Length: 220
Image (cartoon, rainbow, N blue to C red; front, side, top):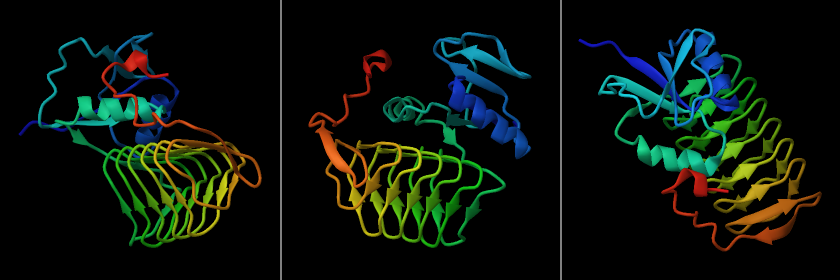
């Protein structure tokens, strides 16, 4: 039986953090894959161009090491025929009743409390607090130091900036941007950019629907 092989797509900053997290968890990363690699190795891990034949098969597992939510969604479509894996830092506290889908990364000192539901390809970054019964949909990024109080819904692809706080029961729509340090006191519609304390909507992108991910370099 062929042995499992683990790959990270993307060898920039977020991909390197994922690689070091995997190393800490004693999970071997066999290679990085990147469309435009700038080097041949990161530490002892080789970096291959996506154009090379890597013989990925049913024993290949991939995690997407790209911080940009839009690009991560595009890449998920590109690699949807392969197995995904999830990484959870050893210092994270995750409730046994919480659910975390494949492809998600949980960084150091994160807290995920009772019956929270975390989607696919989500980033829960360092020291984020996800309280009970929160729902975080696919491709969202919860930045360092964010506090999500109970019963919050975060829509697909939304980015919550570092140190933001969201009060209980709020629903934030899809593909929103919540600025660093923002305090969100009310529901936020899809495509909104919100900043300040209290948070105020400064822009709504009605074309949030989300730029059709066919060409990576068309994503702004």
